[in-house]
Length: 74
Image (cartoon, rainbow, N blue to C red; front, side, top):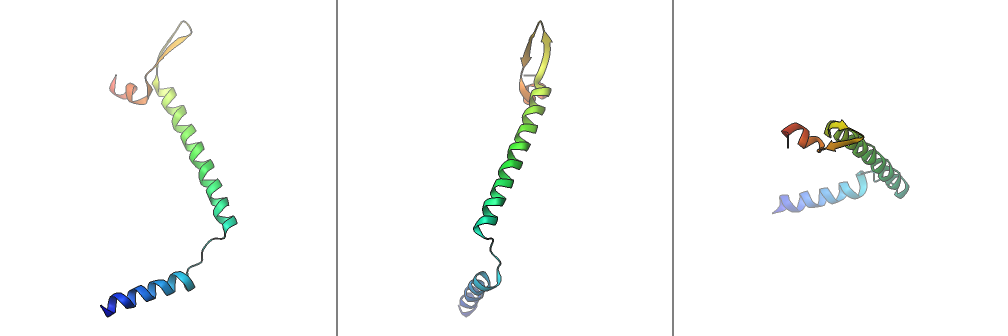
């Protein structure tokens, strides 16, 4: 039991005194960077899905089945 109590005290001491936590401004800045990167990656995946999903173009219309439809012939 003493080992568990010592572990808990050392963990608490490390979290309070030794860990460098980001400031609120740094946290917000990082959240914006992650959001923008996620949107860019989602846009890239959408464009790839659209490009691979176009089965044929005929008289100004096209059939779009998406990437899974392209891969599995659905």
